[in-house]
Amino acid sequence: MIHYEKGRFFNKIDKNELAKESFSQAILLKPESNYYFWRGISNQNLGLINDAEKDYKIAFEKGENTPEIHFNYALILHQNGDFEKSLKHNNKAIELNPEYANAYKFRAMTHLMLFDLDAACVDSEKAFSMGINKFVNIPVEICKGSKKQKLEFIGGFCLANKQYKKGVEVFTKLIEYNENLTAMYHNRGYCYFQIKDFNNAEKDYLKALELPKAEVDMLYDNLSLLYFDQENFTKSLEYASKRIELNPKNHVPYIDRGLNYRKLKKYIEAENDFNKSLEISPNFFRAFGYRASLNLELGNFLKAYEDASKAVEINPNYDFGYLILGQAKKELNMPDFCNDFQKAKRLGNPEADEAILKFCK
Image (tube, rainbow, N blue to C red; front, side, top):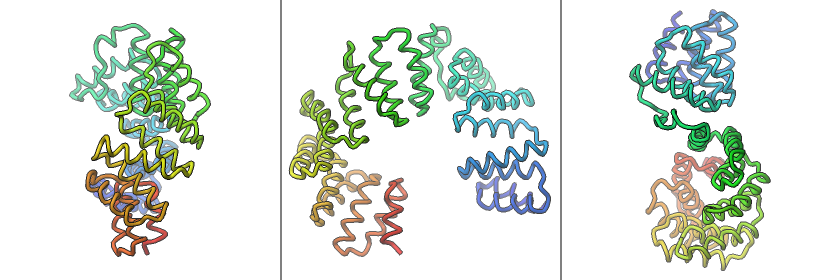
């Protein structure tokens, strides 16, 4: 019992690692359903979703049947994309506690993922009447609107919440209303791109370009990114160039084209594009960062150091800038390069761990 009480205490003060350890000790001594439930909460708070799911399942098997466990399990199922099952457990949480305001709030979002905006409107209003601020702001006119208007709202919600597989479904339904909906092909293409279905993304982007009122600049941008991710640098460069032709004063596509030139080992052209971007926008930190990376590749370590330093001076939260700065410092035998790798890691750079493991002991 003492381990369980310690676990509850640590949970209350957000010491989730210690809470998990205490609940694990409690389970070893007496594997009660409640102990698994609370360890599941600790795992969930730590982002260990698979472990949390296992604990909740064991708790269910051992007879745990509270609104809280059904609600927490519904959160995990929603995160895993199992919206039907999430709804089932959320319903159970509300059945056991009809005053569970957060369950109504969250169920509204699940209804949206199941394309039931009418039910989402009801739950959103119910949660609001119970003192919960509307986390999903569904305008009254949408709740009372046509099916097409409701689907358009759900499509925007899917994009905003990075629910790209559901986005494909809803934009497909919207295309069925009118196959000439340029924005719907564009949006569906973006969803396909995010789930790495590149063939369908390309088809939708190119279809959108053929239709009236196409957002040409954005579609060129998306196609350039699409081909870059497929390592088709020649095609990516082509669409970056098309963006530049549309608006030569836009500093961003020069970066995109420069990156393609670099991949194609056309280093002079790459540097020219990075320089052009900075000519148009002298404080564009990404241009400094990519030019620093180019100089690093070419062995111009002092220039790389100067550009990376400028990039992080302009934007102190630029993770890539710190990564390149650390690499340049290392090549220049500056002793504090590991500090920059650590900074890059804290800011979320995906390559920082490898650099720390390789160079910082």
